[in-house]
Length: 369
Image (cartoon, rainbow, N blue to C red; front, side):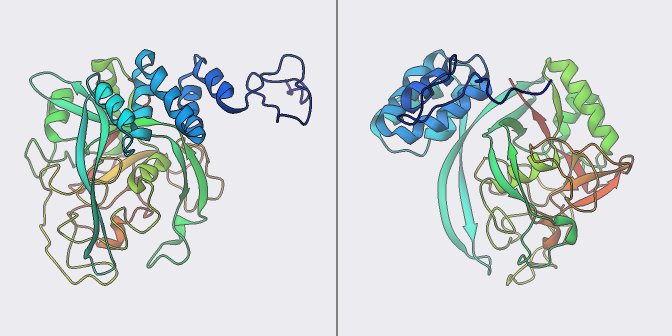
C-alpha cells in the first residue's frame, strides 16, 4: 500500500513558527521531542533519542541521566558508550552507578604513524555481557554502538584492491560482537570437539569452514536461547574500524607488536619484523576503540555474506548481502600468515563455504541480550 505523503506519521516534526502542525502529528522540537522518543516501546528509537539529547547540553544530559535507571540493558549500554569519555562530575557519578548493574572493561587504544611508531595512547572502556557456557567457560560479547561509516577504501589507499570499490555510506544498527574470535574452549563447550591445528584452549579455533561456523551459531543459539550469527561484512568492517578511516584501526600501518601477521611483508614504511608462524593467545595484542581484539591478523573471520566482486548494489543498512549465485563466502581481517596489506580494515577475500584451513576462524554477533 502506498504511503499517503500528507498523512502525519508517529514521529513527524514541525519546525516552530513556520506552519501549523497537521492534525494528529507530534511536534518533536527540542527536549519535548527527545522525551517523546524515550517514551517509545522501540529500543532503536530510544537509543536514537540518546544521541539527540546530547545536542541540548546540560538539559539533554540531565534527561539521559534521569531515564537510565528504568531502561533496558541495551539502552543503558548505549548511554554508557555515549557518556563514558565525558568529564563532568555528575556524569561520572551516574556512570559509576551504572557500572554496578553491568560489567565493563578497560583497555588501551593505540595509534601509530606510517613508520609504526606510537603517536597516541589513551585508556577507554566498553560494556559487555558474559555468556556462561558452563564449566567456567565464558563467551564475552561487547556492545557495538550503531552508526554510519564509509565502507570500502578510498582510491588513495596504498595497495587497495578494486573489490573494495565503490566506497559507500552504510548505517549499521547497534549489535553485540565477540570480544575475540571464537576460542577453542568456547568451540569445545558448544560443539564437543576441537578441529584446530594449533591446539590451545585460549587460542582462536581455526580449520573451520563457513558451514562449520554457521552450525556453531545454530548450536550456540539453542544452548543460550539467543539468536547468535556471523557478522555481516558491513558489521565486520564497521566494528573493525571503530570510528577510524585509515588502512588499519591503529592508523597508517601495523607492526608485529600490535598484530599477529607475517612480519616479512610489512605495510607503509615499517621494516620487516617477526613472523610467529602460528596463532597466539587471545588478548595478546591491543584492542580497537570498541574494545575488540584481533580484528587485524590472527585468523581470517568468516562473514555471513555471499561474495561479490565489488560493492555495486550492496545494501547500505548493515545487513548481510545474500543475493547472487556464488558459493563463495566473504572472509575478513587477515591471519597469522598473511601479508600486512591483507590485514587492512577494507581488505576483502573469499573461500568456498566448505573450505577450511588453519588460517580461518570466525567471530559471532547477536542483536539483543
